[in-house]
Amino acid sequence: MNGRSGRRTVVIMIEIEHLTKRYGKKTAVDDLTFNVKPGVVTGFLGPNGAGKSTTMRAIVGLDAPTSGLARVNGKHYSEFQSPLSEVGALLEAKSVHAGRSAHNHLLALARTHGIPKRRVQEVIDLVGLHEVAGKRVGGFSLGMGQRLGIAVALLGDPAVLILDEPVNGLDPDGVKWIRVLLKGLAAEGRTVFLSSHLMSELAQTAEHLVVIGQGRLLADTTVDDFVSGNGKSRVRVVSPDAARLAEHLAGPGISIASPEKGVLEVSGTEAAVVGQTAAAHGLVLHELRTDRGSLEDAFMQLTADAVEYRQTTEGATR
Ligand SMILES: Nc1ncnc2c1ncn2[C@@H]1O[C@H](COP(=O)(O)OP(=O)(O)OP(=O)(O)O)[C@@H](O)[C@H]1O
Image 1 (tube, rainbow, N blue to C red):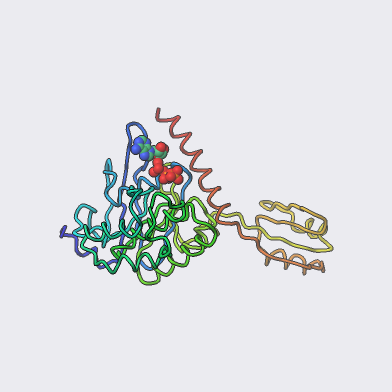
Image 2 (image 1 turned 135 degrees about the vertical axis):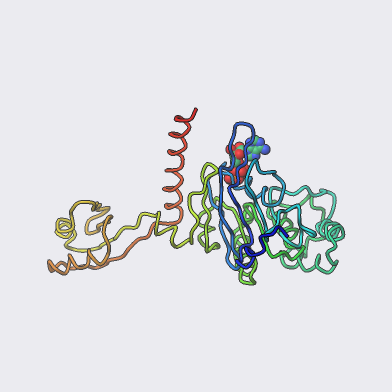
């Protein structure tokens, strides 16, 4: 269609290329480039104001980029014949007629988008709204509203789903439900791209992560690599000989803390080295394990650096 059909042999469903979005002097998204692939849940992580919603809005044509491109399935959103069937989106609170029932809201959307009527009941069941489908949307709780938004996103049975903070307003059961739902949709081969500021939630739901800060790409990697690459891992040792072990371990680049008697937390080395050092000196160990940093630690570390970077560059350029 655009003469670049060769690209389509590579299965990339969402392509962001040098995307920049400015609102007046504010650069919300700054030369962002990344791809989102099908078959896995990709988390979109960043502190408040990082540019996640702006990027998602650009993908579905709600915001025109200042420069750069956002494509789904090789096409710009405006080229879609049947948008709801190509990409389902849950963005900020939908404008829903408060007086309409969830069922009628979905039915109206289905009619205007050429989606069969039976799909309405299917998505109502899928999101667990069957008991309240006939009730006025105006009386819905935040969580019910989120479920309705997800039903709208799924209505056209799209291969690509974009969800901005989908767990907002959901209770713990709802959070668990959406985690299972999204993983299931990805396992069917769909592209699932969701933003969250709840890092622990993304760690349990997403396999891949795109992290942004101040509109710029900070990481595009698997969750596992993100944590091991950015989190601080340390070795925890419990030993009746802790003090002597600490003396033998001490050296350049190694820091040792003792949060309580007989316990050491060692950074800058590996569990194997600690075990070998203990064995070489005949010291008894009761426990030896590596504590990996959490996704939360990794995220804080990465975005803290981004904030510093921004302050220095702003100072330099203005
Ligand atoms: N319509 C707008 N006009 C002016 N500035 C805007 C507009 N929309 C977003 N911004 C600004 O652009 C930046 C990025 O906002 P965006 O909502 O994309 O971030 P976000 O990562 O989704 O944040 P949050 O997690 O708080 O939703 C913010 O500084 C925001 O204030």
